[in-house]
Length: 226
Image 1 (cartoon, one colour):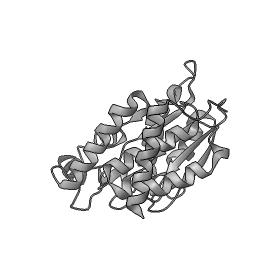
Image 2 (image 1 turned 90 degrees about the vertical axis):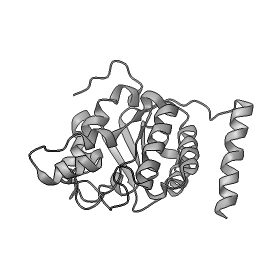
Image 3 (image 1 turned 60 degrees about the vertical axis):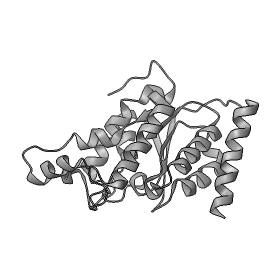
Image 4 (image 1 turned 45 degrees about the horizontal axis):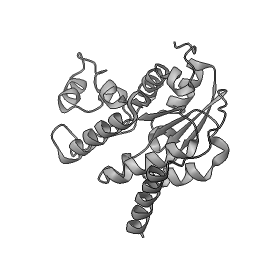
């Protein structure tokens, strides 16, 4: 079944590429921002603080949190595409953390999510690696994550945010644990609650970085950033 779905995705993308067809462009409502993703979008570890609650404070806009526990990019895609009522809003996609070993699937799923919107008011967040002994610098899954992020950056350009590199750089050089994490090229412990999920401070930093892209996300060159 998974192989059939993968083939269907490839055929879908080929048809779009060859025919030039796409979803009809729609008018975007800029009063609300929607975030689709997994645990990191849901805000696991933040103790009621998510990057979307913090983004709402920074922008004054309403946010919808469409994160769900442990979902792959395909599961996130299926939920998002089926909920057409939310496609009218600027959209943030943070997907692929739970199927990092399938780079092409992640790329295809995100491409379908973007195509389903009918507008260019979107932002793709890069994957972050975990402190699980398998994703530190030089390990196989680390290399997969770096490769996926590079691929997404190449595809989406200014619509991509390399949140992993930013968070890794926010380590505290006075904290021995953070220094060790920085050496391993993973998100510092001071910004995490567990091996992967962020704490309130980490989610606030994500929100701040997303806000630097608010003009692109809203498609409004005159939008102010804070």
